[in-house]
Image (cartoon, rainbow, N blue to C red; front, top):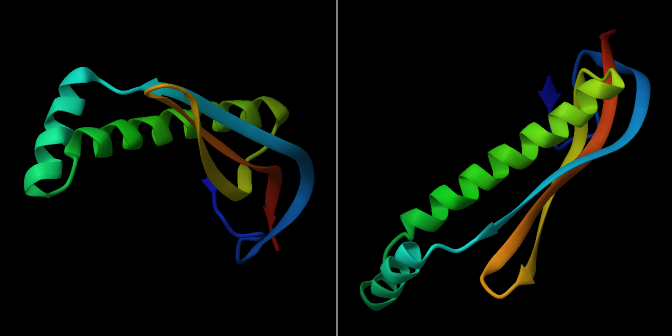
Length: 106
């Protein structure tokens, strides 16, 4: 499945438009990661635990969006965007959405 943040794919035309599809996941911070993040705030550097958490969240959200698009008969998702929001103390939602379409060669 083609996933892109642009409105069209070179060499392809939109044959069908199925509408908005989305995927999300809510993740809570981990106490071990919080401890290490506190140490990094003192000495500086990348918070690898959070980087991994965000990467996993993006992957899971995209897979859920792709599943929804496939169920509609789409072979691509265009105009993909990400959003985050805090849902509780120490927990955040990662939300991804786009337009499910069927692309064909020109």
